[in-house]
Image (cartoon, rainbow, N blue to C red):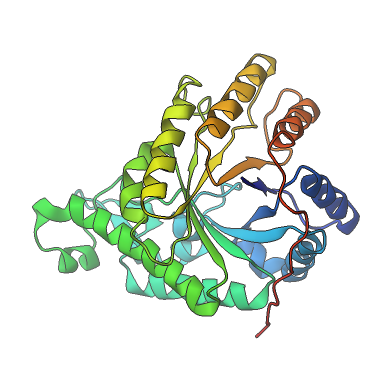
Length: 316
């Protein structure tokens, strides 16, 4: 089982970063996920490059998530997409003529901008993978001029929207592979979107499908973790894709800490290809204890070899 740790902290203090990454590596983790928001990439590219290189120096592969790009993906900071703000006509338009704060993935200028941004990021920074975090866009049927032109039959708009989203994610992953076929692509869903897994596994350029099995955040019984995980793992195995399940180790109080261990056992029992979690993430009653509990659980996973060949990344 590969271990991935999301590092949602600033990359501004090299000594602190070195300590954190060494601690993450000591758990047996093989990679980190770091979120990039549009504004951050514009304002501190040197810090970003230095931080990602520090991760690679201790043997961690670096995966980035596109935080809030087009407001289509999740991100740790609730900052709006700069692109969507500057291009309001790219937004989803509902049947009542109301715009929603999310760019339509069928809008060609938006798609081209996003794919250009992805290519630029991959050529500019030492990146081993891209994670598509909780893709959105199906909650509202879009009646924008582009969607209406592509799907004149109003009765088919819901199915069309779903097909369009799968097509969009497939093109995004293909864009990544055109830059470098060795860069890994991952899409992580919420449990309510697990119906998409079957279709996602048909995408040739998508390597891994994951799920945020966050029982407490979703106000579900911890027993649901095993059911969600089993659905994902069985479907991905049938289509020769890798699976990844994410442990909720945030927003945990003393009472929920025991359930966190139960959730971990449910995750490992379905034998996913990878497990993800967070490093010192938010809203824990006792952050130090929760991170130590997380480390204890991760160390119980059989370790892989703790060294890897750093990928050569070219700059443009």
